[in-house]
Length: 187
Ligand SMILES: [Zn+2]
Image (cartoon, rainbow, N blue to C red; front, side):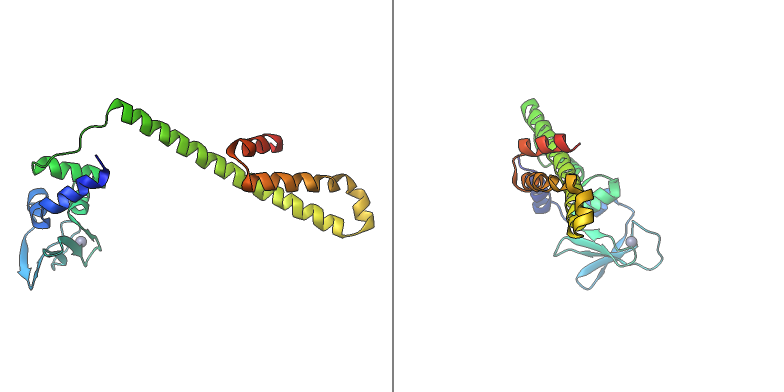
């Protein structure tokens, strides 16, 4: 089942008033035009700035700035992450909760997370080494541009330039394996 399904199901079936009276029963709301207002359950106040828009099914507090939809309200009230809050609402209001993931799906998700992390780590390393190599490349060029005396002193570095250029090219455009190879050589 797709994640967004559970949010959609809550949205379609449960109103903001229902979740307020279920999860924050002490909140008293009165009509004000087409909205409802009351004392904010999320901060201390004496004049009501907690506003509920029944048409749009959202809430907003002009005092502390919190606001959002039914799921947001329950995630604040119960200190849950949005998905957990949505599932909780489904359970409490008799709506189907998504099926627990199969062991197979869990393994796949773990693998995907590992792949994602490995890629992020590689990207970071590539970025750092790229910066360092670029700095070297610029420094060597600067020294060589100074002309003969410096050139002779640093001549041994001159031959590094094409190598660095080649490495930078791989870090920019190479495959993951090629990049890893360059990182090994540079470390
Ligand atoms: Zn508030």
